[in-house]
Every structure is written in C-alpha cells, then in structure tokens.
Amino acid sequence: MSIDYLGFLKEVGKSKRLLRSGWIREKVNDPESVAEHSFRVGVLAMVLSDAIKVDKDKLIKMALLHDLAEITTGDVITERWAILDIKKRDEKEKAERESIYRFFQKISEGKKYQLIFDEMINRVTPEAKIFWQLDKLEMAIQAYEYEKEQKINLEEFFETSEMYIRHPLLRQIFNDLLKLRKKR
Image 1 (cartoon, rainbow, N blue to C red):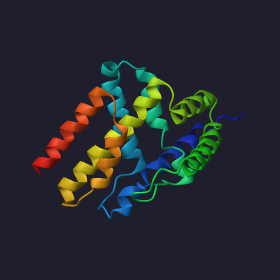
Image 2: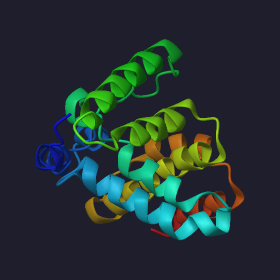
Image 3: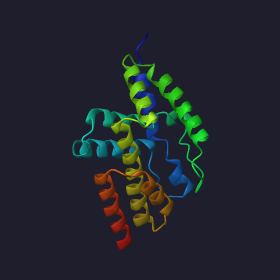
Image 4: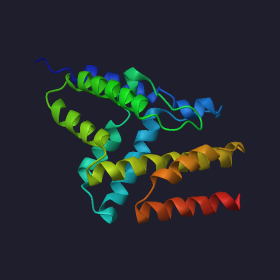
C-alpha cells in the first residue's frame, strides 16, 4: 500500500474550513470550524484526563478524531428540540465509520485510529463516556462565548449539555459556567 501522508493531511485541513452547523443554524456571526471545536475538546482531554483518571493518550486521540468524518459527511445536526432518533443516529454513525475507514486507509497506522473511533462511537469504555461529555462541555463553553459576545440566546446548547455531562468534575465546570452565564 502506498502511504499518502500529504494527501491525508490535505484532507484533514478541510476541517479548518468546515463550519459547525449548529452555529450556522443559529445565525452566529463568525462561527467556529470543526477543527477549532476539536482543538478545544483536545485541550480539555489533555488537561482533565489525569484528574478524571482515564487514558490521556486515548482521550486526546478521540478528541482529534471525532469530527474528521464530517469532512465527507458534513456536520449533521439533529432538529431543534427533536427527541433523539436512535435509528437516525445509527445511520449517521454508520456513515461516519465508513468515512473514517476510507480516510485512514491512506496511512499505514490507520487501523489503530479506526479502532479508537469505533470505541468512541460505541460509548462503552470510560474514555468514550468521558469523551462525549467533554464534547458537550466544549459546546456549552462556546455557546457561552457567543452569547456574551453577540448578545444572543443559545439556551438549547446548555440544555443539551446538561443532559450529557455526568462526571462530577465536568459537572462542576459546567455548573460554574452556568453561574457565569447567570451573571451576564
């Protein structure tokens, strides 16, 4: 197999230009890109993993990998206030897995990243469970920043985060964010 690192990295670069759909739907000015979101999720994973007592390396990899499939699938979001449709989520995740598998075939060590992506999607391991909470925590932090900067209401993003964030440390950070939000 020919290893195409440059082609792989050019594909990764597309995430810097792919804007997050939820912010576009809410008409946020200058919405973040998928890469910007993934970066802060990665930083959260790096700085909080020791305190949470999970595998730091794996958690950071999940953070960096989690939205790469969106380069080909797009940033698919659920309808506002819709009840989670497990069938739709499964279809979305199937498309994302296929995208990740194709994507990582370009590099020799791609199989290990495919396995980490699968672990993340399956939501069973401690790292996967924490990852999804970090993803929602980052979303809430970003929503707070947009509300503060642009004087808009993004309540839906806080309500969604509230449903997902369970780990005591992450919950405390989220609650601190909610207190800041109330002070505005």
